Image (cartoon, rainbow, N blue to C red; front, side, top):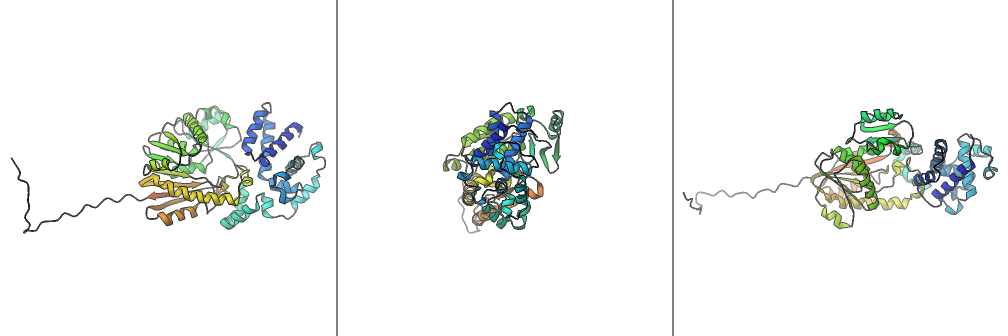
Length: 433
C-alpha cells in the first residue's frame, strides 16, 4: 500500500493533539477532515482508523515501540520521534510494510514482533491504566476480562428511528434505496444497525430528521421510564438531548418535557436537534442553582436522571477517555451522583417515578448508589426494576438504569363524626318553608 508522507505526518500531529494537548479524538479527526477537504475516502478512512486504533491501544503500541512503560502517560515524554515509532508499531502489527520515511528508518519489524510475544501485564496488553485494571477487576470480578476485551473493539453504528416522522420499515427501505444495508434488533423496536461505516450526518434522511445516531443500549433508557402522552416529564441532565428526543417520540409529542442542564451550549444543540426531529414539547432550562429545582418540586410525573459518570461503559466510542480519567475523578463523580439523586428526586410528584441511569459498568456508580439512596429515602421510594447491560454479553455499550417509584400521598382520613345519644340535645336550625 502506497502511503503519502503528508498523510502520516498529519496522523503524528493529530496524535500529539490528543496526548499532549488533551483534545478529544473525535474532534481531532473532525478538524483534520476540515483542513484537508481534498482527501479521498481511502485517505480519510486510513487516517481515522489509525487515530482511533492508536488511541485505543496507546499503551500497548508504546510498549511495542520499546518506550519505557512508566512514561506512556507523561506529556513531556511523548516526543515527535516517539510518536513516529508508536505509529510504526501500529502499522507493523496491522501486517503492513513500513514506508521508506526517515522517521521510521531505525524501526525493526522483528524487534516489534518479538515484543508482542513477550509476557506482559494484562493492563499493558489490554492498553488500560493500572488503576483502572485494579478498580474494575475489584468491582466486577470474573466478569471483567470479557468486558475489558469487548471495550477494546470499535463500536458499531446504531440509528434510532424517529417515530414522529417515520417508522422502522419505511426508514430501512429508504436507506436501502440509498445504498445502505441495515438490520433490525428484535428487542429494541426503534433501532437499526448500520452494516457499513459511513458519515450518516450527511445523509438527506438524517437532515430530514428521520433518525438519530444512538447506541442500542442507550435506546433502552427512555422506554424504561414508562412515559405516556400528556405527561409532565423532566430530563434533568439532558445534555444535547438524545434521550429528550426519544422521550418526546414515546409521548407522541403530547405533554411537556423540561430539559435541564448546567451548560447552555448543550441545550442550544438540543433545540437545534428538536427542530430537525419535529419535537415541540421540549422546553430547555439552564440550571441556575437550587432555585431551579425548588420551582419544580413535586412537578413531574416522570424524571430522568442520566447523571454524569465515568463513561466506562462507552469506552468503545470514546477510547481517549481512559487516558483522561482517574480514580480520583470517579470518586468525585460518585459524590456528585449521590447529591443529584438525593436533591433532584424532589422534582417527582407523589405517585410518580424516576429513572437513575449511567453509561458506567461500575457497581459503585450504579446499584450501590441506588441502595444508598433507598437507605435514607426508603420511606418515600421503592425500587421497581433495574436494567444492567453488559457490553460483553450484548456487544452494545455498557449501561445501567434503575426505576424508582415515589409512594403516593396518603389520603387524609376524615375525623370521626360523633353520633349523638338519646340524651343529647341538638340545636338544629329551624327549616323554613
